[in-house]
Image (cartoon, rainbow, N blue to C red; front, side):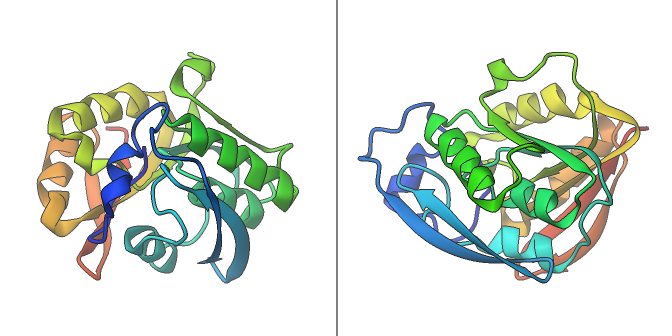
Length: 208
C-alpha cells in the first residue's frame, strides 16, 4: 500500500495485498533523502522493490523534513518516507501503516538497522491505536487501488490529524492529482500545491 509511478512492473499489482503471492526475496535499496543516504532493504511483493520510486524521490527533493512531532507514514511500503523522517528529525515519533505484511516486516527491519526503532513502528492498520492523532501525515498514496478505495483510505486517516496538522502527499498528475486536490478541499481539507516536477504534484492538505 504505497504510492505509484510510471514504471510499475507486473508483480507490483500485489503490493496492496495483505499477503502477496509472489515468492519473498529481499533486495537492497540506496535512497537519497533530504541530503542523507539511507541503505535499506526492499522485497518482492512490496511497492518499488529495489528502487526509490520517482514520486517519492520528487517528494524528498521538493520538501523539507518535519521538525518533529507525531508523524504518520500512510502506505509505508518498505518504509522509506517514515524512516527518512525518523532519521532527519530526532524529535519525531513515526507510525507507519501498510496493509502489506511484508512491507511492515521490512519497514521494521529497516528501522532497527538504522537505529531508530525506538521512535519508529510499522504496523497493519488494525494494529494501530484507534484514537491516536498525528501532527503530520506523509504519503505516496496507493492511487491504483481505485478512486473509491483511495477516498475511503484518506477519509479514514486524515481525520486523525491534530488541530493545525497537515498532510503532505505526492501524486502523479496523470493519475488524478489535480482532481484529488479539489476533492480534498471539498471534504474540508484545503489543499495547496507545494511543487510540480517530473509529472508529479506535491500536495499539502490542512484541517479546515
